Length: 207
Figure 1 (cartoon, helix red, strand yellow):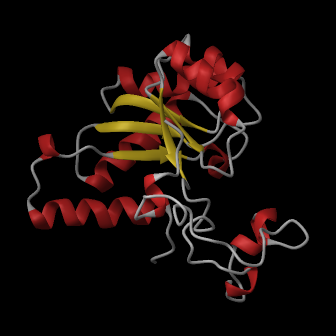
Figure 2 (cartoon, rainbow, N blue to C red):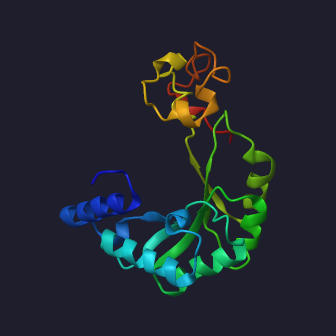
């Protein structure tokens, strides 16, 4: 069912690639392994098996970037690195990425399994990573894939009041920035309004 799960998304994308006849060498495919969906146990064989199934759903022999979608709290960074390295050694993943790892875990993981990039929230409202994470990535040559650079639409000008959120909007449940008394001002001016930028995303990330 269309539940937004990784399996569903991979299947839809795989079908689209096949239907459109898209050349594999013109595509860059990334997907993820979500450790917590597999319980407390985590072994190289488990991760390799999951990666293989992702390849089958996508209709490819190898994934360009296979992400560790968040750190598994029950296992060391070194152990997790060995699990993802097994995917590279099996030829199922060209590169490995991680999501929201601490600088310490990045260093421990990277020493065993090279990290190509890390996913992390980064916007004008989320800049805490610039203190430790960004310098560590620069030192190690790891790219940063910024997600929610517009702070989940809060910086687009589309949300002018916290009252604009519809009932059931998950942002009001998960993120304090959308909930009083921590909510942003009731009237939010679109970023760039006082500058020459014509679109909010033109000034969202520091260069």
